[in-house]
Length: 287
Image 1 (cartoon, one colour):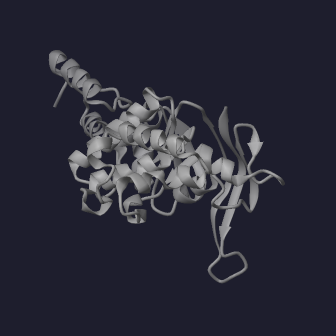
Image 2 (spheres, one colour):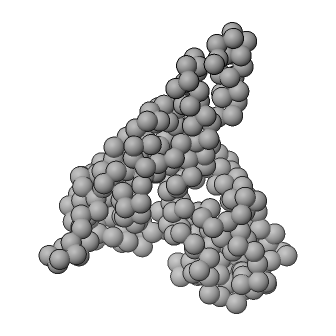
């Protein structure tokens, strides 16, 4: 099963002086079980794209098909798409509002009409999935917790609805290094151990390089590149021209290559970079 985006075009405020076409004939297929990173400069269309995946925005042209069903076809219940495709906005902790962690995480399942036992089990499951101690925190006020914990509560609220696809817009924005590491580790586990498809929008290339098995590059409302991290980051000059940063190791190897080192420009991990540098040092091939 998959999410399929076909010839998607979307325009904000059509017919007004502020009209802006944010997406232009976008085609994308996201296979179940994958971890997809979406990158691009500010205004490239990333956030607009992901808001179409569960029907928050309606295409001006094109189709969104989730597990074989056109979500804008007459008779289709878009509430089903929103259960299958969970969307976590940037700074989701600002949307917390209940008096306890349990009530906040339970909000989605309760609106689905589930029984109390099932709600209890789902809340406990979701909190465990993001590394929150259920017994210790279920009765706590979410507003007294750390930024990283609040972020994980918000993600748990989506997971409690048991989506097949989890879409996150800059989930580590504003967090300290420890908070970022915790969030990213749990996302990786959700994908690798639970089989949840993850779609991650991020400006942090190191995060994307570490987690994603496929990267989509957005530019002015279109997909300009798509491939594995190695394929995408091997064209470092193109990404820099797009105003994007490179993973730290890709940037290092690119600079070494410019100085005449014989290094693999497609390497992007610390292990790969170390191997390339040691290879050159052993051969005496450095300036």
